[in-house]
Image (tube, rainbow, N blue to C red):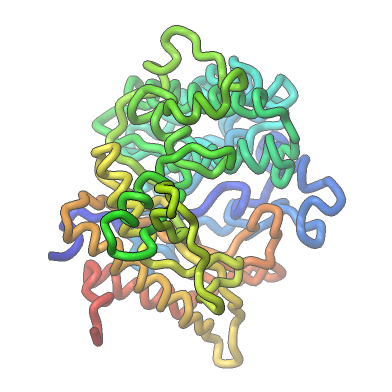
Length: 453
């Protein structure tokens, strides 16, 4: 058995990471524009001011997507480009950019899968309290209304939020990303609750205002726990660890249970105690709007076994374990186990909304970008995703991160995740070997993965 006939092969990007043109055509300032001005906040004081200049290269970029054979493209819409101050007046020139992009994608036979929020909150909304302000859910709904009214006659697949664990955890708790806050536990939990309310409001907007049938999801982190052995006790321990709530921001159930099950998990409520967010009547019904897919971003996983005390126990990776340039472990089974565990709990078709790796890539003297390690990594991971599908997990799609090298947040431009190489001085794009390989994977609907096995 292979991937289902309607399995979606895609790639993904995010607005602040690729668009540039931060002061053009009425775009407002975002919290990332502000954060990048902090000395030392970003590697070598870089920013997304120009990035890949996708705002001016979008036609070329869509042509490259077509050359690769992508069936779908996940991109994010910049809230400050559409509503410059975060609330109030809509900017028609900002909407027009995404209108043109969607038309170009459809003309190329590529399905647009926009994400409404990939971390670039307008500075004006942040100045009004940002996610700490409960009204942020209404601001987000107003912004979503403008987007859906403009694109909802052609767009059929939507994501609401990307990785609340990160934009709340790294941005509001640890001050490692924009907006660079170090809030108390009760405050960042409240901000997270308001972000989940915004997700629910956006789902309502999409359902009520899209001009035709649509699929709606979101893209949280899928934090992966893998059994250290095939022993049933270790598998059960890994499953428990997958959904256990700890005081780490990157966990699954605290964020996903409200969305899919309509409640915060009991172990999280016990852990957070009086710091847990105040849930008003109707909040959980709003957050738990029905979704069509469960999407998540997964890159690597941790090994878990049943400890001597009966609790799940972390098993360190062996010395010399494979790692990517981002210092993340290469753990192909994470796609299998995360898809399996998530489907068992939430019972919705699975979409991998991000998966990929950073590599040390450059254009060779022959004009090629040979990135064999990325090809090998992607092949191993996709074979594990196929294994999940073979065992009955309804796997609906895969979005490779990323379409092109881009601004990697606080790491600036030192990380290259793309299957298209970008020269950030000249703007020149070069298909890497992985792009050509992925083209063949798509053309054979995964058959290429088994070549030579």
